Length: 282
Length: 358
Image (cartoon, rainbow over all chains, first blue to last red; front, side, top):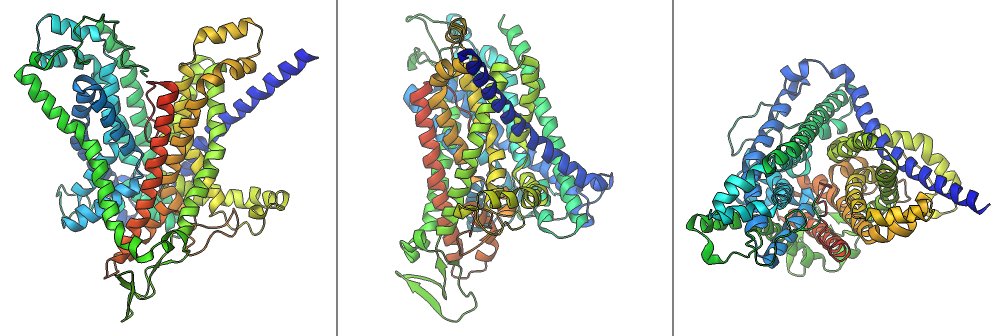
């Protein structure tokens, strides 16, 4: 009797947990499925050859890629350098303060970043809607992720490598460059992939910093509004006609495909990193 | 994931030279080392610097609106930029704004708190339960396959959630679920009344719940790894069922960590903008009439009204939105800090996921 109760309770608990797992999996399927179903008629080559003016996505896709590239150039080096400092040079107390700083920055709502980007970059500095303002706003947002993955990647490198470098009389910089950094590179790269995925999906920090245009992007940094994918999803979802919804859905599908590619790259890099690092460390 | 700064490295003895652990003295640094340290230090100051810069800009832009409205900012329900074309201006506490301008943020503060708390209440048990069954009961292959879904959920752009919520999920709920809910739970006032078309508080909260599942889930997953396997095996050896093992062994280990995960998830829901903007229905100047009704949040309103705020020649419109951003910033930073303090006291060096659950 008692035993039956215990088994029953066990079964009930894990069934509930299984149900929870279903509830987690279902929306992912529903969103991807729903977008695909809606966007199906619009998923043609026309998307890649026409700009948003003619219900295509060419300018938005190019714009999103340009933004990602910019984020890579700005947030990449700064974030990696910051991660190196925190893992290799920082004193204990100061390090944990800086760490709290980037953790808190990661929690700031993206619209706050966009709002400050607007009042400072677009207005106070008179950049107007500009590519550079968008890149800086996005970089602010993704910087913590790059810092954190770099730091964690370096901490995971065994201290014996540093000891060996010191024992050989190498300077810290040389040890870092030749022994500590190489095994950490794949993990750092996966952090950059995360940063790219986030930049691709953000809207709020861009609305009032890069604005929007139906033209293809120019590489002009100032006074140059830019089209990007998430804006198309946002704008067209508020428009009334079916054709506009289809384009919004198509933009969503393109975003999710790009995202899946990035997740794939991230996983491949992670798998490679395990093998690569162990080959470097053995 | 790393739990301790020292965990991965070898167990260097007390006398060993450990660079990265400040055993080396400053005099051991070469010139190149010093330069590298200075440059990377500059970079490391950037995130914290940005944090103070953002906070400073927001606060200084918000001050005029706070002065103009006084405590009315937190208690008033009317938020209007006033008559921008009137020839007269309103003056309050020495600040000039367009005629009849009023900045009452109560409905936005209420909307932000209500939607994020409902979302948290739904997402927490779901995310924890899902991760439990994923890490404890399912074989490794299934586990890595299914965790793709968590990654996809974390990565789907906020606008795509909004788009899906407003075109598919909201109408579906309004037609199939809400009428029943309204009938069954109608005795409780918030659940009573018209269910609308699916744009409103409950739909938004449900979508938010989906959006914050990944951060709670990934934190839970990391926590589950900290539970010592021997204690679990011991419990099993005593004849406990898996549920009892969870209750007696696992739960005490992860309890505070899960609390921290909840706080982080909540912080994320508080700041969510685009999905909320599209699904909330943007009700201004009033509190929602019931749980299905349209409402507004702080973040959504900033995007929604910035365009019209720009037409305010006195500049007060932008100041008022900055005040909304300031309140939002305070709430999210406070929740984040609390979450991190909890986990530091609970799990020591466990590296928490940040932001979106990375």
